[in-house]
Image 1: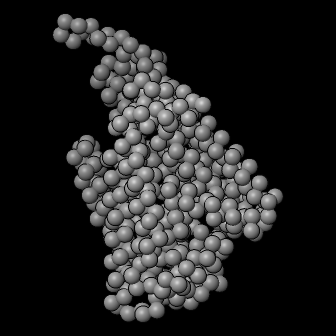
Image 2 (image 1 turned 90 degrees about the vertical axis):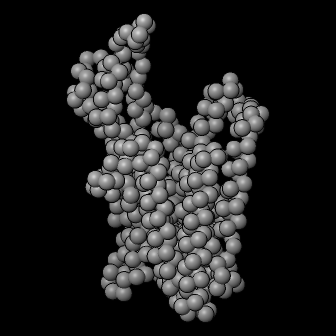
Image 3 (image 1 turned 30 degrees about the vertical axis):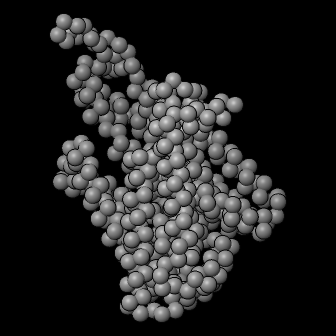
Length: 432
């Protein structure tokens, strides 16, 4: 009842209602673009290939995850949000090693705008490269190693390839713009919302595929695993370590300020769903290399170990990258040295810990300790459906853990944003 009441209250607030409707309109535009065929392709062949690819799983399911089914039919939005995610990863890595980017990151909003602009340029460059690769992949026999013959470009010449590359690149740029619109004028993080919409759109077809392949029993098992993951990830997202902070009393003008006691909430899973997205993005690279490298031995190795989600090596690599990106992103979003300096500047201290360097070391030690179980937890949750899939031989849900983690994480973050706005207007939120 509280959840339904919160939904009603959300639509009672005019500003919040406009933001929700605006977000839904952008999602509808995004899903529409995922079904608009790219100029120059054989539409009937694309429809046949999409139908065959739904039961193929494996590589196709991996690279099709973030496009919401647009890739297998080579729609205008076939590249999805993947180029932007990849460019964001590259820019964050370069921020650590390039002094100029590091200086921009410390300039506040102005510096962040510069980094965002260069991220857009890099996104367009990656979109041109990936769309060129897709044009060649979809014009020859069996590029994905699934036994499905692909020939979606009947007139394969320079003019048609250029048209396809321009269309796919423009589609990626439009997706990037739509995501930024949601962030600025809608509800939640725009890119995360678009990924959420892509994943949700594929769930009905995946569920039908399980019923068609294995029957009702395995379908119930997969649903039970999904429900367990949902409950577990909700509990993990709410877990935090509260560090008490005491502020000393000081005189400002004629007033005595300070003296209050607050706390720093260090989340067990500070990085949220970002490690899953980053790890999936990195594992997208071997798929592209598989179709570029001509050496048969290297292609067989990539196909066997790097794109086969049921192999032990793939699971180990996937879990290791999730743990790595959890620590990496946590280090980016929370700097213990800056936190300690800000506390010292305003007269704050942790009881029993000296201000300054010892406070930074204490925060870093606590954050390192609580990040490890959080990172291992999301890695284990992400791999559980892969293990169940390998045991049952189901190809339809090779990324169930990733899908559920992203959808639940995005849902929680969006609900918290709505709840914060409801709370400001004295309405009861979702999580009360």
